[in-house]
Length: 137
Image (tube, rainbow, N blue to C red; front, side, top):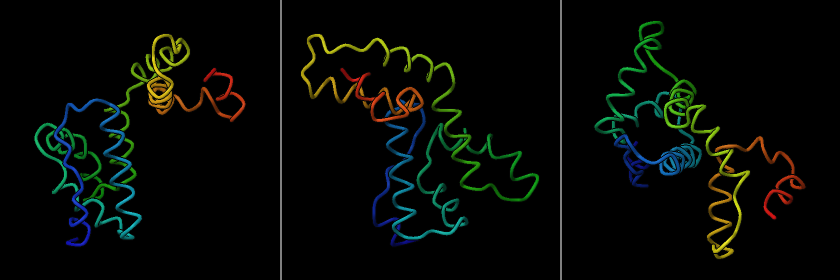
């Protein structure tokens, strides 16, 4: 656990923008892979990386899992996290934004950054490289 915490994983406070929450989740999973964390270790880290509203949200959300088996799994956490931070209405809004995105006055870097940010919420829209290419243009 000490080696894991030396990587200084960011804390999640709650109320973060969806892109920030997505980055946090990806960073946590990268750390887990790097240190080959067990399921129990993954869940132990939540005590160190969740604060404030995020900690209260997980405490309330995990109750059904814990009451049945005495512990929740990372898969359950991730599923609940994605439902909380990326609900269907948000995904639909982001998909609509992606489909209507135009470069306009944006630089190519700004346009590309926005394109991939929106695409991360609706990867099904561009399920092939050809579709992604067509959508990007």
